Amino acid sequence: MKRNWLKKATAALVCVATAAAVGIGLTAPAYANAADTQITISAPQGDRPGTSDLNVNMFDGRSFTAYKLADYTNVQVSDGNVTAMDYKLDTPLTNAMVDGWIAKALDQFPMTDVATVSNGTVTFKGDAAAMSPMTFVANYFYGTGADIYGNTGVNSNAMRIFAEAAQKSLTAPGVTATTAPVTVNNDSAVVDASQSGQGLYLIVDTTKGLNNQIPARAMITGTPVTVNGQTYMQFKGSNATYTLGSIKLKAEQVVNTIADTSAQKETLVTNQSQRTFQVTANIPNYAAYDNWSSPTYSVTITPSGNVKLDSKYTVEVQPAEFPTWSTLPDSNYSLVSPAGAATGSLTVQFSSAAMKTSTLSGVTVRITVNGTVQNVTTTPTFVAAQATFSNDQSDANSTGTAEEASLGLFNTVIPVKKIAYNAGATSAALTGAQFSVTSGTTTVKFTESTLNGKPYYQVDPNGTLSTFTVGDGYIAGLGANTNNSTTYTITEKVAPTGYVLDGRHDITFNVTVTPNYTNDVLTSVTYKRDNGIYGNFLDTTPSKMTTDDGQTVNLESRTTVNNRYTNTQLESEMIHVKNTKNPSDFAQTGGHIVQVLIAMLIVAIVGAILLIVARMRRRNNTDRTQIA
Image 1 (cartoon, rainbow, N blue to C red):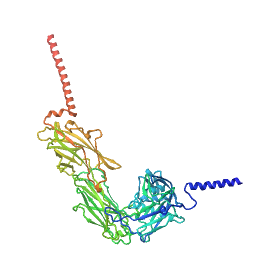
Image 2: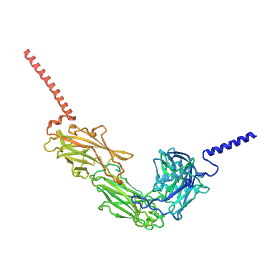
Image 3: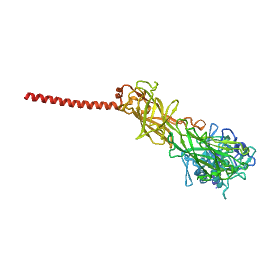
Image 4: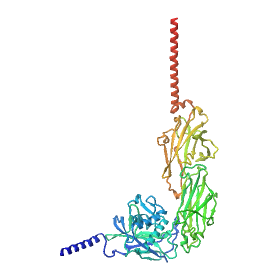
């Protein structure tokens, strides 16, 4: 009996020691100071030049609720930073609940590189494949303490949907969620997690009278981490880096994007190429701000000087809660700057009254307009989009601008130079040579202009020129409006004055233009040249275009100075075409000399046969004479 009692006592001591060793006490955890369990919420600095953050209300009169989501476990530290940790779900939570919140958010605002949603079930993949649901939240829904908008891994609307789904679960009948008190000051708010403990929290704005939970008012962040008596304030993991214990009260970010939605999107352009441009931009949830009487909001679409926008356009709207688009009645917007004005821009101004209602408050708008490329001489060729909006409810004249989005339209350019037969690449150009270009049985038409003081011939379906004339110039716009390879036959039809050229000596070569794509995005163009039968009349040095792989010219980076492109022309190496005054130079190399050799061989064979026949005839005649 005594022995059994001793076993039980020893086992109890072992359990207590084990619990202490892994940090699980029988009482509330103790921390070195209050800062170890605080999350400070501050406001971004609104109305800053060059930024698109929307001024937020001050903290006076506002209230917040902080829901605990998980405790920290298995914390790893290195060089003063937390490098990895796991998350133990708070008592009311389950992985299935968290999966459901994530699925609702990503069903409408996908993050397909790390997760997919099918029939309400979320599947993690890529970098997130081995993550638990809460680890995924900590990596992709976390609001960093340093950023302006609170959440950088997920967009505002997705964060809002996630928060609403979480709140619905955490406030459901029979569920007792752990919360931490929040103290609101004049310019900040502080979450006190001294009783609920260190861990990950969902913080929502619960101020009375606000229009539900708008995107600006939902945040996920964590307290600092205490390991062996030391407090850590920075997390630097493989998938995320953020400040612990600090979060910005997220302002509503206005983002505009522009895309080419035409059937020929991401293909090369030339003169008269037509494209469909689609601009999307989100309107802030102005209805949530009681004192915002007449907010202003407009979207401007600006093409480069060589692109003309149509005068007709459509405007659609998508409420945050719905994935479908509907046509916006024209009473809710007006055209401020008609297409075809001096700048060629189009500005759509939205109704202030409608932005204070559900019609335009917190929605995304989409403007679709067609445009035509007028020429490809101008570089760069692009269409840009930018939203301008009220960003301070206390100052009706204060506006912000979203970061401009730009869509580049790319074209090919091939330099061609005429030189004398024995001259070098840097020699003076011969003038007056004319070339025709055909694709299959179709003759390519051109329009002539100039670039860098040289003749510049751009492909133009409405062009009047069936040849291009160069001494030193360019052909532009080959390979346009298709994602397939196109082969062109280029033939010199007229030689410079004093040089030899006739039907027997046409210098003909082929150039194949191939656009290259990665994930349906144009990344480069490959030029490949077949020198034909007079290869010795092309170039003075080995040509990249004549190699097995041809010459590949990569697009310049799609990130540009101030989001505008600096160059949208993909220029190949120069093709040097030589001319001679001596007809005998045409039978030196290439396929033609092979033809000459074959002809000479045939002549030789025929001659040999005739010689044999003649000899046989002489012999026969001699034999007859002797017999006679």
